[in-house]
Length: 522
Image (tube, rainbow, N blue to C red; front, side):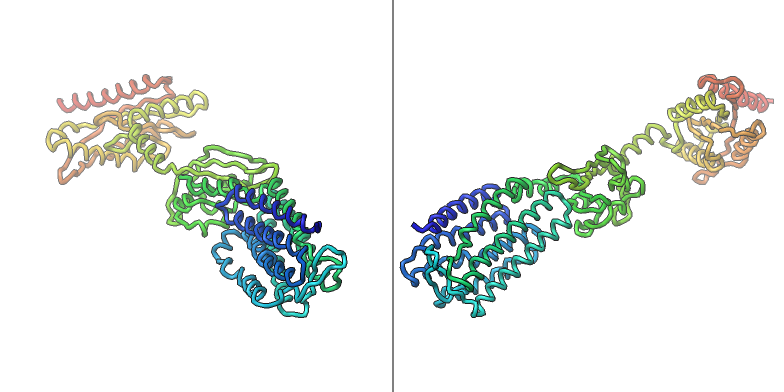
């Protein structure tokens, strides 16, 4: 039995197993189906050549040679399509490459079955080695050169595309994949051109044997799949599925903080399409530049970060409060993959927190600090005085005649009067001072003291407070005449307890109010 016949039969079996293995990895993936199609070409070619090598006549050998032509003609299209899809998957799909990539092979196949010759052979003759039939080269035909040019152009462009893809991606695994595929494909292409196109034009010593040598492709492809996880469905599909089904924005950045990939949730929160986000620096969407640099991976040695509050600005200029976490994605096979940044929108949470904080610490009517916030601030001021010597004073204020306004005009007018009084306090006070409403018509001002300020400054503030009430307030057309009684306590007078300070100021205020009543009776 011819040894090439036995090897061809074994090759057909091997490529059947390889095709089934590839489909088992992930038959839904277009790249896997193309690889299986490439295996089918080699199966068909080898099965036909089982009978080609041992055909009894030249006519029978030409029959099996023509029958094998879909294998050796379409192998270039399937292989090139596979390489292009591996390197530029989405772009190739959008371009509809399958619509034009198989036109030349179809023409060549039709020509082969419609005429007495094939693109590579104008006839067949027995090889001098005794291993079977060999081609009488058809190098003088334009069909020979169309087939040759088709293979050269398709393989050159697709392998160059893989080279650019691996170089641009920068991932170690992709670089190893590309290097292995290019080397394997280049060796197989060179072998195929030598055995099936060049040698038949020079000598009839050997039959065409590329189908036999193609076993090297099977072994090499299996090695690359195992070693570098080529065409592994889980690795290819899973991250994309996770990315697009995640409710929160997820962004992949490169070393310079440029957005490499992001999901629709990112586009939704920033109100910018994904296609316009990719390729832009993430820092451009951050309010704080330092945070943007940190999240962009600019800090050396930064591997991960959790729960950092980051404010983003969307395309409409609206500020989005987010909680950010990041980690540097890398592994032994790929090296540095990228910086994975996840964001969680906390804008509503922040707004609710601010509202709750305001409800807890501010007077609902006047929007001034309430008793709770004031006493917390007073405790802090006392600590500063004890440790740093920062002096301050309290001015306790009670409105004179406020009950009469309520009784005469009603509580709505009384409330409006309190709002007007609070507004006047906040307008004349310095930023470092604090005014709070601690009761119905009772207010207290904490006056911060600076070096060089003293009794005169405090008297001036009290005078300005009294001046605010010399003229009546007009509320909803009603003239409301109210005055104030003040009580001043100073921390420098040895009152270093919150209750003592408040009690002293309260007593002095009531002392002034009592004096006014006595003078009024007189």
